[in-house]
Length: 232
Length: 370
Image 1 (cartoon, rainbow over the protein chains, first blue to last red):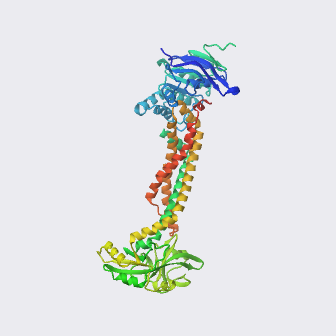
Image 2 (cartoon, chains in turn yellow, brown):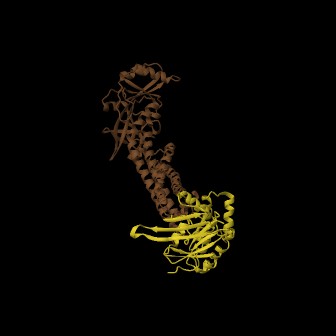
Image 3 (tube, each protein chain N blue to C red):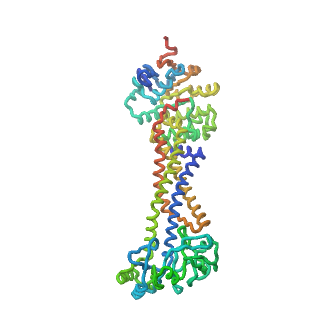
């Protein structure tokens, strides 16, 4: 079975000359279908940069990135946007919901962007929101939702276009421990892992190790496979 | 995406109100200025349009009642009367003059009218009688109110007291007021023979061919210009438009700039405040053209609502102003309103460019910032 995402010696350098900062250094990883991979590491270690590269938001300075075995090198911005829309789902620490749209509309808009409209799209939205326990809150604006509800809407939005890979950045970072626990449970059950959906979760929360298949440690831009830390 | 544009607007009613009101006020400015000029035009040709004379005679080389001087000698009028197919000819004298009462003074367009004339006088008399004798005058009822005089009172014209014997309607405009006095009295002031005329109003025989009559008149009266009533009115409107076109254009440009700035700034600030949301949409896979639709949608919805509000306001203001100050006739032409729609749409599109370019340059990684 081919990997959904593969990074081959990927590096990212910001700036030039003496001011250059190596955010990611020769990182390699493979994400297989249905796999939950945790990326942990201290603040400033390059986790967000790594996630942005995996999310096709940032082009690496060196190395190769493959999605479903196909290199993204040479793809245009529009092609990358299409790949993000159809293949990837994003969950952000700050939820990033559209404040003017209801919970339901926040989910529908990404489906609409992917050309999914009408009754089928509406039914799917209802299904996802009900499954995530938002059946009675779907017509509320984000301002009227609790932090946990907002993050569940963000999860519903990430699932809307049935992506192969979900990228989550500190998904429980803004939640209290009880709500964080609930959201973490959703990553384990209810987000389609059983159907082969993979997830990369960047977090400081060690509780996530319980549901992860693998933990990667990132420090000073260097990624190490396994559960341990880089040995200096 | 248009739903998002609409919701972004309605979720912030204050900003939406500013944006819509801005474009509405810009349009009110455009329509009011154009309406005042249209009203002035209407007043300026009211005399020509309302007199029941399909053909008008004037001195050769003259084609306007305003800003021109026409003289028709008594001999030419007698000669014209001999032409076959004419029912009657009414010569009127026309001159400028100040109508004064106490400290008040109004520019007057004075028509000298023969007491026996069937036409050439005020077409809508609300009080008093027609056909002024020497020392008598007919003025507009609204002008009388403005001057604080009534029927039977006196106003001064050419430093001579004139007794008001009639009050008319529709003869008081922003540029001045039409008044009717005795023709012989006016001829003396103008130093022309009493049977001379500035313009002659021609009524053809009933059922006669007007074009054929005009042809005969033009060939037999080479020293006179023969014009159809509608052409004479159109010629005066053209003259007024030439005088006002630069002012209208300048005011319109100012109004367009006001509208552009209001829409542009409100949409731009709204875009700045939602940068993170737009960045997030980019991260999720929205391309720049999709996001430009949101910005353009917001701008166009604001403009559409502003055009509706502005048109409504302009009509209400026109009615109110004309009611309060009848001399200020504001005519709003629906065709002129429709002509503004594509221009304002273009202005709106330009206003959306800046916020759209702001979105285009947004880094989607903004979504990852906590």
